[in-house]
Length: 202
Image (spheres, rainbow, N blue to C red):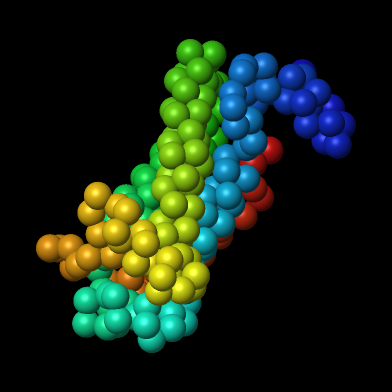
């Protein structure tokens, strides 16, 4: 059975030859977009994480003094590890999505229903962890860094109210500039992958 009008993607998937696409549009999922779009969203989230570099670089001097050594860019505050964890989630789940896409294209049109369901399950779990869990952690990290631009009074209030100083230096030093740079590079890589897979997708 051949594909229908490409301007109607749901009908095209239901009547097309791809078992994977047919099952994808029939099943319930919180995030129903195709893998290239999901990778593009993850690229955007990593780009948001990379904003911690310009955010910290433009702190007023009073806020800079709160960070160890008075240099936020080269400090490793506790809250940064939330961003490191979130970036790792993005890269790990993006790798799963790329693997699913490659496996799907290699096996089609002979992909069985059970194989398609397995790939879709992996895609759904990776999407939820990457876009929901990882996305929330990235926004939380950037939010904490943005508080520095609200003034030293706000930063001191956060430090006093928190059970542990979110801006204190950690034992394992991973500077802000390193995390931001890695996030920016990873964002570019994921965006290029999303464009490539979009061109390769039927």
